[in-house]
Length: 121
Image: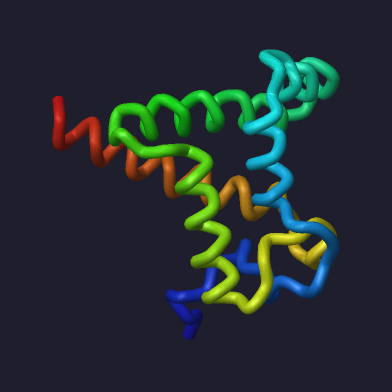
């Protein structure tokens, strides 16, 4: 019998990698000169991940504003929670596929967006 708690896309626990992804993103947001983040996506415009970044970043900014939250403070909180949960910050080269992780999180976001739509239509 197949374990219903395991997905065919499940990945191993993160390994020790390098750097702190969330700190890098916060730094990019805080030092953005109107085009730093946009320049990255323009340079990689053929990548579905770059396109997803644009959409997700814009949505995160708008939702944070709607909830009267600071995007940077909430990212810092996610970093704290992740470290408490996994014993390490989100790092580059951690042995997991960031594209698979992104896809799974986007599926969650898609479902929560649909839920919100159904509750607020």
